[in-house]
Structures are given as structure tokens and as C-alpha cells.
Length: 78
Image (cartoon, rainbow, N blue to C red; front, top):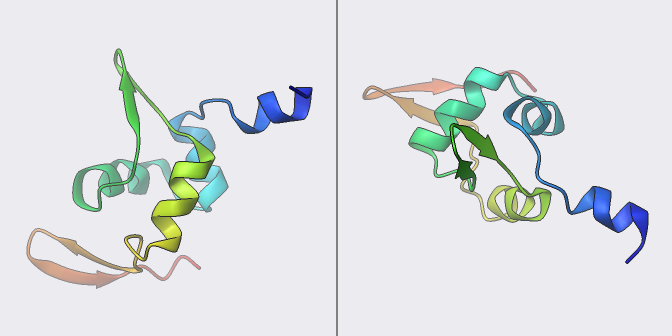
């Protein structure tokens, strides 16, 4: 296995996955709760695999329209 493969397959933190998705870390927590972002709880920390997150985005589950407490808001961060 190449060194680059190990880097690409490593677990990412909340901060790293937020940077990867160009979102705030608070939004990542909301995605975990409301949008079923694929993440794994390891102790008190959340960890993510890029391949799983990419599949989630491609599936359409990461829509820009987000329902929070019964209200629809538009994510205009992009």
C-alpha cells in the first residue's frame, strides 16, 4: 500500500471534514443530527471517511435545503 493511499484512507476529524466540505464545524454537527451524515463515533470524537462522505453527497442526501426545527432555510454558503 502506498503512503498516499494511507493518507487518503485515514479517519478525518470534524474540523477536517468541515474544511473538506467547505462548511462550518457547527454545520457538520447539524448534518450528523438532521441529515444522516455518515460518521463514526469513537469515544467522544466523531471520525469520517472521505469515500463515505463523498457517497453521501453524491446520493443527494446533502441537499442545500436544510430543515431545522420545522423551518426550511437555504444554505447559501456556496
